[in-house]
Length: 138
Length: 438
Image (cartoon, rainbow over all chains, first blue to last red; front, top):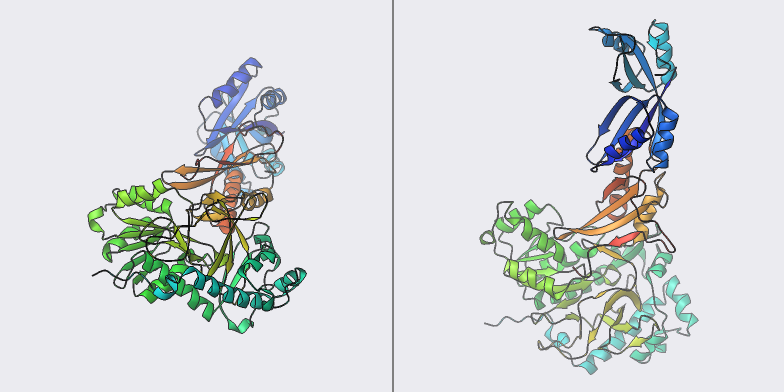
């Protein structure tokens, strides 16, 4: 299953990030992960929320440039080497990773790592074929 | 010993009657040349001018319709060529606002005439053999650099063809070769001064005596500031590629306006609204006819530059009248670090970029003493892909394409929606924050 990540364009300007968190707080959005890629003058904020559609709608209503990006959430045992197992499988099968980040919490003693890959269907297929588990939603 | 600052004293001090007789002679010849070009043949016949003999007095020039930049574009590439192609030894071209450039052809004789005007101009500022001349104007299709080059050599100066930019190297050359004379934009002279100390140089390293400044309108205050900072004389100059280039008009050592060499150019000024010629002493749009070129004749060219012809004679004794420093433009042309740019040239590049549309603002501002061009755009849904590299690539593409089309390196700012002012009525997409003639 693909997970909907919300990507937001942000200027590197005081108060922009807190403006996003304020909007999400007021909308009672539950966050599961958040990461920011920043450059000299702008950043891209990536959000995994329990209510992605509502999260997107709120941000767009507030005039933010936001969009849905599909990513894969892979559930892993919380042990050394678990991440490498996925990485190895991806590498062997030529799944190109654009970026990855971890989520905020354990789910049933497992960790969830979010992957943005070039070809998401291929990536999911590889996870399934290798007996790994991709989450459907939070 | 008082050095003779005339290159051709007889012509430079010719009394007005004789000067006008010479102008009439040359005007007739120029009209004759123009009649050999496809462009002017049609246009001149349209107003009943069939042969040079139809020009009987200088007043008759008023029968000739004005020539505009658009006309030159229309005539591109050969519509204004008046001699056999084999006679052409040089061309200069300028980029066009609509993609069509303009071109001026020169025969060897044309270049010799231009060089003579250049030598005259340089001498009028006191330049002489033995001077070291560092030319900081851009060499190339633009006439600013190459325009003074040959005259400076002919005069016997040591010419350093440094071209523009590379501030550190400019200092090193000025120091190593004890440059006495530089040719640069006024803003570059101020920029150089502001960088001197941090680059490890001081005035003691140099032997600078004068700066020839031009290519952008500037105030008397700016000239004086350059003179005070550097401890030199700064002379204003005027030229445009349609009229050859630098040395159309040049200040003499009196520094009270630029002598427009009337044996080479017929000068008129127009009322901006009625387009009728105005008297000397009244401000108007400068209109020029080049009398010393056969490769590409241009009659009554509307320069779009605002100036006033000074009727009173100059104390130096030269009889060619002076024009006041250029006060500005009659169109929306921007002059960015000496480069003439229409906003439409910038817009053309930006609007080609996918996802931007009309969602941009062109800002011209000052960074230190230099002009800075900034393109501001909003990153909306069409541009945003979740990939920072896509935005970097877009920015890079805008910078590269602007650099290729207008030779200016712009900064591109990416903003969130809502940053740009909401446009109502006629959209304002150009903001010039420099405030007048700096």
